[in-house]
Structure formats: structure tokens, C-alpha cells
Length: 444
Image 1 (tube, rainbow, N blue to C red):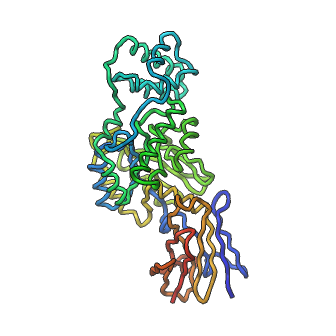
Image 2: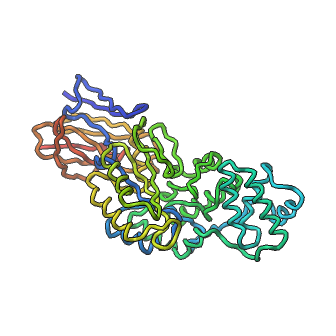
Image 3: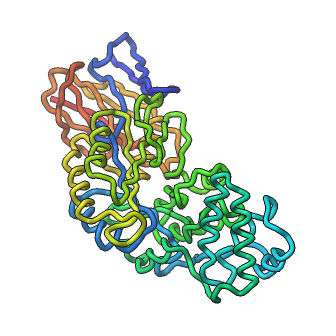
């Protein structure tokens, strides 16, 4: 007698729905589910670095490689040696804008154009006005932002700045890396992702300049590293400005700033909110260790993730040692990463992109199991873009109590499995590629 089992996600927490020729209970031989996290781990951790300051690659990356821990580096692409696209203002000639400011005060109608142009007026020292004004505008202090722009342009007209071009500090600290370096890093399993071209303050940009910063950074990464690395991005300064997000959503599949999903609760790194209670399947809990953040507190984030089934801890590092914003000393980073490494029996340490792929695939997946001549035929499919979402999912299948050994085969690959037991019976955990050949479980 054959049995068919089908599992699919529903709204709210995932419920795996079993379809049988005869009724069965949970834990019965053949019952298959998709585990919350890869390899059946309790929680997930993504270690991320912003800005691509040189010490991240000369000091932090060798430590990551020694510990065999993956990470995501959100890089400012403009200063990378070999880049085609660099910072520029998309719009009218800047001299025309400068001339207008002599008679037309800054207001809602012209602020975004003036703020977008601020770093490209032909003088050094103007980029800081763009950064500050964009932050004021985003926080609702628009009149302050307008006055700051009027001050900037008055100084430009009066000749208070030296001629030249000067990018923001984050840009300058990223100088020194090359795309050849990054090609080696991705070959070793690291995710290189976008952090825009120049680290501009996006809420202070108009639509054309936001698109230039994000689209051309994506195109640069695609040309240098391939489509796989155009999946993730972080809009600089962690802004969640609605205007910026609506543009960015259409460019990148995964944003660390914000990813509105029906299954995901998001807690920003500035929030004091704890992961629970959580009314959704997953919690993305961002934490940003600063220079003075205690190791005790940082370790408590990891412990909380280990003790719960739904937490995705996203760690956001910036500077390393003396270089970059809020730098983390190497000794502190080493102790912390070793602490994480020691808990990999409970934690899935994954890149930001892979953790996102896993959750989305699981939420859109359907698994069916059929008994055939003493084996279980397992089919796994999802409805997402198959080229973009190709990460294996971890399945958990309960097996007959008589099986002391088990194997799984998918295509030409056969692997032995460890037989495990919980309160519902014997089971095996195994990896299956979605939308691929049927997996066959066999035992003896």
C-alpha cells in the first residue's frame, strides 16, 4: 500500500499538511517536514561587515577564514580598484543650480536636487553638508535641512571652499581593495554585496541619483563577480526611508535595511526590542556591536539565538581596529567569533543572502513523500525563481523503527545518514535540492 505526504506553508506559522491514503499521526514513518533552519539547527547567525574598509579584509577576513566562518561584506563599489562606475551627479549643470541659489531659497521643491548635487559642486568639503542635510531631512527636520543647504551654497558662491572633489570618510577608508581580491574571496565562500557606489545619504537624493547609486553598484558587481552577488544590499547608514526603500526593493531581492515579508518580524539594530514574543515564523534580530559594546552583551545575543527556534541574528560590524566607524578591536572580534564557532552545533552560520534564500524557499516550498518498494520517494519544489533560489533545504523524515542505517540519493549522489531519535520516533535529516530529481530514502 503506497502513501503520499505533502507539506506546504500556510499563512502565519508553517503547518505541514499530510495527505494519506489512510490517516496517520505526526511522527509516523514517512512523515516529512522542512526544518526551520539548515541542518536542523536551532537558530541562524549572519556575520556582516559594512563599508569595505581595508582592515576588514587584511585583519578580520583572515580570522574568518581560519575559523571557517562565512560572512557578507557590503562594499562601497566606487573606490574598488578596477571599478567602472564612480560617483557623479545626475541632473542639470551644477553651475546653473549654484546660480539659482543666489535668489531662490531652498525648500521642498528644490531640496533633493540641491542635496544630490552637494558633493559634486567642484569643491572639497561639501560632502559633509550633503550627509548632514540628508540625515536631517530623513528625520523630519526639513527646515533645518533647507537652511543647511542655503548655508552650503552661499559658501560656494563666496569661494569659501578649495577646488576639487572629496568623498565621504567611508569611501576613502575602502580604497585599497581590488576586484581581483574579491574574486578570490567569493571563491572561498564569502558574499560580496552592494553598499552603493559612494555611501551617499540616500534620503537626501532625488530618484535619479538614488537609482544611479544602487543600479550602477549592482551592475558593477554583476560585471565583476556575476549575478549571484547582486542578490543582497544595504542602503548606507541603515536608513529605512520609504521613498528610498520603494526604489531599492525593485533593484535588489534582499535588503538588510528592511525586507517586508508576511513570515518575518524585523528588529532593527537600534531597537531595544527583544525577539519574543514573535507572532511570525521568523525574527530577524539585527545587532550592531559598537566599540564599547561589552562581550557579555554580545554573547547574550548568541545565547538567545541558540535557545530559540525562530531567531535569525544579523550582526553588523563596521570598523576593525583603528580603521572605520565604531571599530571593533581584533582581540575582541576573535574571542567573539570563537564563541560563535563553538556553538555551531546549535547555530547555522550563513551569509545574509543564504539565510534569506533559505527562509523564502521554505515558506514557498512543497514536499511530498511516497512509499515505494521499501523506500521513500521525496519530491521538493518551490514556486520562486529557480535560478535565484537554488539553496538546498533540510528535510526531516521519520523512518521505520527497523531501520538502523539509512541513505539518501538525489540524482547520481548517494550519502549515508545518521539515524536519530526524538519523542516521536526515529528520523533522519538530509539535504535536498528543490526543483530537482526526486530524493530516495533507503534503509536497512
